[in-house]
Structures are given as structure tokens and as C-alpha cells.
Length: 248
Image (cartoon, rainbow, N blue to C red; front, side, top):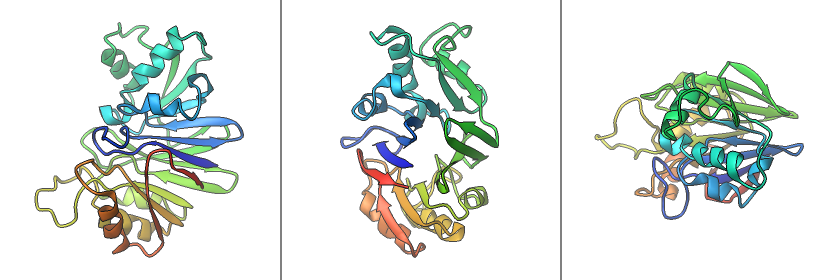
């Protein structure tokens, strides 16, 4: 299983990266985890749009889902169209939200090009076994665990501190975890994001093999966030950068 960072900028696209999007590939199948602002163009440097096997949305904030509009346009109007219908997994109401984002009639919305599925605790997506758990955020949001051939990765999505993330990530090879807030900042809003040290704490408690720190906003430094994570996590720490490729 291979992980490619398509976009890792937190909250907004930044000068060095689009917003959140990650590509998991195995057995010729490509699963896109989130497709945030600016990510669809960057994704096409790695695979053509008609090779996307499925899209998984952690939640419906624009920095995680809005470039689904671009994918919809490609599936409908590009010379490669019509594509096989692409499955999209997300919170309840995703189909309606995305139709509204593109100012489409709710029925059919995007459903003639994309097949929308509400998240379940367990689903099979191509060769991947995918598990989810709700996490702590102002909107319905999910952490996502993907397993293939004895290897596993958990993507935190956006979350505040929560035992649910620890339980989902228990023993995984890789935790791809957001660290959007600074340590010891009294202005940090509650139940929104993790600090670097909180990301490390979740990784340590879950006993993960590696921690990849991601979703750092462009106004903060990703290396500062990784150093903060190292205060609470004793394993290997990497910082996500656009176009980085990792074997899980």
C-alpha cells in the first residue's frame, strides 16, 4: 500500500500545497482521501481522473471536499467522459451538500456521475478494508482506517482530542494526523483541532509505528509542529509535504 501526499496545507490551500488530499494505492486501485481546495489539479500529476477508484471524505468543510466539484466536471465533460461512476464515501448529506456547492438541482445533483455512500463503521472499498469512527469537530467528521495485505494506516481528518482516534489507530503502521494548533496557545479553540504535542500523544497512546504530521496551516511551520509531537511520541515522525510518497 502506497501513500502519496496530494495536498497537506491546513484549513486553506497554501503557497506550497493545496488543502487536504491523500492518495492510497494498491493492486492498481486508487483511493483518494479527501479532495480539498486546489487538490484536484495536483492529483492529476499522479493519476488521470478516470483512474480514481473511489473518494473518501472525512467531513464537509471546503478544505477537505470542495474539489469534488472539479472531479464532477471532469467526469461529465472531459474527452475521457463518460467515466464509470466513481463511489464517494462521506458523512450523511454529502450528495446534497455537493449539489448545492455546484448550484445543481438536488435531484439528480452529481449522482449521475458519482455514487454517494454514507459512512458505515466498516466497508470494503476496492482491495481496501475501511473502518471509520466519528471524531470531535464542529461538523460531523470521521477518522478513517484503511487496511490492506496486513498493513494499516489511519487518517485523522480534522479532530480535537478524542479517545476515539486512539482506539481506531491502535497498532497501525502509520498515523497520518493533523496538527493545526500551536502548543500552549491560550487562544486555541476547543474541540476543533490538535496541537503538535496532542498529535504525538494520540500516536503514543495508540502505539502506532510511524506518525506523519499534516494539516499544518500555512501561517505555522510544519517542523515546529513535528518537534512538538516529538515531546509526546517516541517513534519515527515525518512531516507531510506535497508529492511525498510513502510505503505504508
